[in-house]
Length: 130
Image (tube, rainbow, N blue to C red):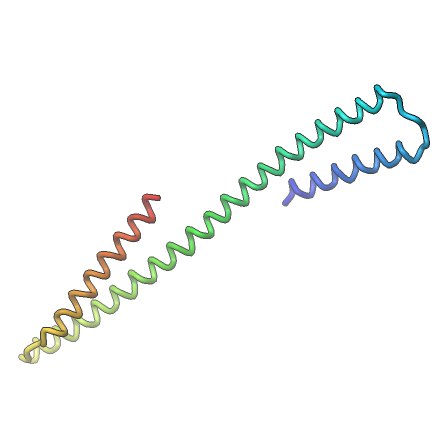
């Protein structure tokens, strides 16, 4: 932001100088015009470098934002799966403690949750590796 403001001020200043020179009505020699052109090229190259630097910073910040969103999503998914697994296992343990038989549907549900948890962990590992 500071660089952008600095570049804007510098361009405004350069524009004012050019305007003042043109307003004075004095005819410029070919050497003066070439000198002005060289100054313009030098200033433009400086600005271009600053623009690229600012863009690189913005891209890095954007990538960080995208990574943050991805991490938050993966973490929430893992946390939710862990909570569901614990809940289902506690329900199963309660039934077993009461001497009741647990249906295969309940066991299969817990096993599916565990497989989903493993897949979410693998997703997180791929996120870390990229």
